[in-house]
Image (cartoon, one colour):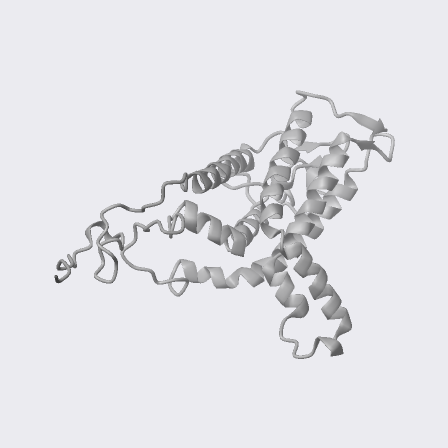
Length: 276
């Protein structure tokens, strides 16, 4: 008996009804809760994007002058609307308008560094664009062009955003060191612990980047002739195995750091001081 004639139409462009696929009307035959993972990812991204956007444009409660606590969402603070002490040695060159974040010099590059990150790409491709949402689940796209056209071709610039992210991590480190301050001189409080933990995790996330691994050990034909770079490559490779974990941890530490500074700066709570 001959097989039924295949319907070559593809309603919705899902790929399920393409002529090279088995004729199954369901989007998937999976019976497990395959949708939970992309849903959780979507909720996590949404929580950070909403919080970070609100705080970046709030233009308030971002600096504690007594202890020099500056939230990373406002560093470096280069707007004319910035508190002079929050700007430090940075020139205030941006106009003070509501639609321009005080840290507009750094935030776009940090956003692009994360958007083009190898882990984040895979995460939001699956969860947001559903390309595909999960294994054995048809995606709702008629065709796939990869990262060869706008806007996805920009993903290939990730290595350059890595360099800028490294510079911004240095700035965040400076802010964390500068925060060991009190009205009487040296000071140390709970805010310092939070700022230092955040900047350490930012460094771990940045250095565990795939681009960093290529920078320190790429294009080498003989590791034996470059022992220092080989050792660095090995250390970065160890960090790289947990790049996904660090990517999520740093979203949490960024929000925690900003939230704590906001509470102290607004007078909602007092910083728990250990020294000074």
